[in-house]
Amino acid sequence: MNPKEKYKIAMFSSAGAVAGQGVGSAYEEQVNLIQTGASDLFEVTINKWASDPDIQHFHTIDPGFMLRMKRKNSVNIAYCHFLPETVTESLKFPKPLLPVINKYIIDFYNLADQLVVVNPSFIDELVKYGIDRDKITYIPNFVSKEKFHPLGKTVRNEWRDRYEIDRDAFVVLGCGQVQTRKGVQDFVKTATMLPHIQFVWAGGFSFGPMTEGYDELKAIMENPPKNVTFTGIVDREDMVNIYNMADVLFIPSFNELFPMTILEAINFNIPLVCRNLDLYQDILFDSYQTGENNDDFAHIIQMLMEDTQNYKYWSKKSEQLSNFYSKEHVLDMWKKFYVESWEKKFKDVKEIDDAVE
Image (cartoon, rainbow, N blue to C red; front, side):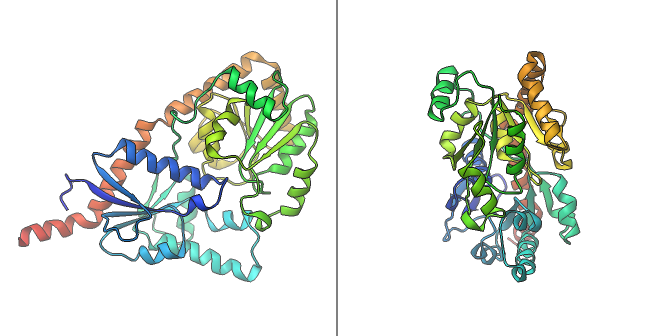
């Protein structure tokens, strides 16, 4: 293949099979970014098994994809959305199966020619599992501002009415699957400390009873405090309306990569409140407020509600963060990565072929 021609990229994913998970949102945004922003350089197919691509990009770790990744005539790229411990903290598996599951995940990553992580902090973690550092590249997630942007007060009021939330309420939003790992219990406990503030959790049980902490969380959802609303799983097309009715995004997760919900929310310039996790430092910089416990969270949220200047300051920080993760910036990273990955594997072979010809 001549590097000046279009590269054929075959995208493979089953992320859309389970509603309400960030992997599906990340997949949708990344594919759309390449299709609309780099159509002059790449020709993209989706889940087309009969394709003969230059590059294969696997967004999920399906067993069938592992077989496909043994193809030698393509550059095989795998997305790393989670580590073994992330899976076991999210879903309940029989203990005897855990070593098998962990080995499968790492074997899948090892089989790839190139591995993409959405948070630089995971590079060292993957190296600890024996994965070659040289084949790991950090490219952040991306969210389109064409899809996620403020919709105005009328829509804000309509959606607050839909969930029976006072139009003048200060609304704190949490998003994601209802899981112990996501800090849902602390979200609710913080809400009980601030009964004058409305808390909304957008998300549900994407994996049903397999979810870690399912029984306890189900009981909370069925009988929440008066100032807490659980929306259940929300279609991604409707999430723009959910963000539009919120004043703050509160993410008390204990373990994350690069939550899509953060990238979506900052397009609305709403302040971020997160648990103090090292992994946020390299991706959110100084643009978020952090707490160690529920007392900290309650204090931060109370200050955002009652101090206008404080709220404006952190709103501006979210706006700056949104501008940093621009379409142009992330698109350039992908274009460079795809081309260099192909050249790294095939350029020497092509030069030999040309010399023989």
